[in-house]
Image (tube, rainbow, N blue to C red):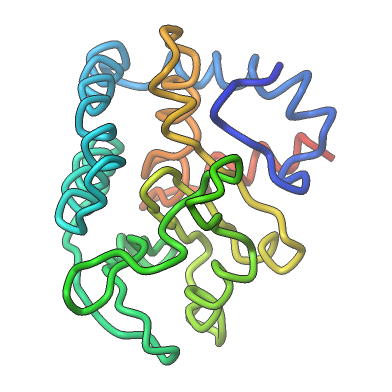
Length: 217
């Protein structure tokens, strides 16, 4: 089953598992998410913030939108601004040793610099591609202390990267415009089930994705 707005890039999970089995697994896991309906209601409220962010393209709005979103997923959001070795101005926070999050993409004045967008059907907006992502987070994946997971928060999209799979160009992409234009709750269930702190970087057990990855082969 395909969920519009959540995309399995280059088979992060095998095609058969993503199309035919993952939805049922997500349904089972969603039943264990505390106060899920209330959380979905709160996430729907970010709809207005997203369209304002998309229109104005201001760095502080990007930080506010993603901060609210990530807090709903139970991350401790304490962003820090820094400059990468490639002189890119980035906002990031570390959740724990297994996960790090980046906000894309501003310069030192707080203005967006390319690639800040992810709409390939709009000629006025430069899409984020793998090369651009790798330039930004590549140095974070070098060495023995690289986190298992990296979240990249752009204006229009969330990129979910896993260290081992990113080497093969595999990742999950969440397109906010596709999500917020839907009335169905299923995309939100997927988000809370697959991308929460408990799913990606729990403190006391293996991640849900370790189980899903084993099932998908």
